[in-house]
Image (cartoon, rainbow over all chains, first blue to last red; front, side, top):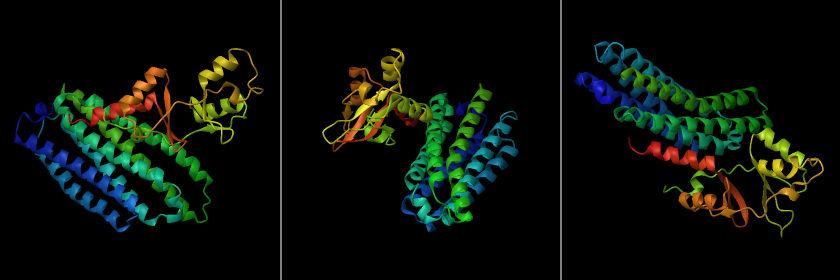
Length: 209
Length: 134
């Protein structure tokens, strides 16, 4: 189906390649964050900001190309919306990385295993989104969407357990509690954003039929 | 299906003591929204068991017995069917089909370390399919 998208010209093909690169950067960003969680590497968290800056440049190029006239008018808003959702995912990772720097290590150690599991699933879900975008070409989006929903449900289940664990933790400082709570909210909402993006791909697919 | 059991097993096990009442088990199953509980061994010579919603409905409620008076150990299935964490997914599925069971426990050094349900298998296979390039 991507064929149908860029059949009209080189500019469309350029946009598609840039969107793929944009999603790829998001995956790299999620992967980098997973490694920093595993190694408790605070310096490593800055990679997320670097990827985001790189992604920002690509986003501007994509938007410019679309405004210059790439794609039929009825497709443009859907593509732009898709990019906006991905931008939200980048923001989520950026806030997550800065939150991680301020976490109380002792508190984090108590939930580290579950957090790493979620971070790993976030990288997986991101890779599947990339495949989903590429699979628009083959009308094979449904299976990718389902896999994303499965991961999202798994993360929701872990989140419920984590909330139970958090309730038992003794928090002695307001900011420790707030940062930990924000951290978990950001960590577990990444999959929701990716699910939104995947739903939007489905809308895009329908609009192309 | 080149996946192994260790990749998809759920390590969060809900357990219950064999001397707890069936009503205790019902409460746990409802609160946790799950369908089975791992029954812990009574002593070192005992083995793990499993009590499922099926056991409770067919062996207690359908017979009009009082769940407050019956102990979990009286209705639990023992021993549980367990496998090694290195087992291939296909072998796991074959075992589930052979014994007509919906979940298999993972054992390591005589200790149960995880469980895999049919839904876990389904999810894992679907994710693997989705990961296949296009």
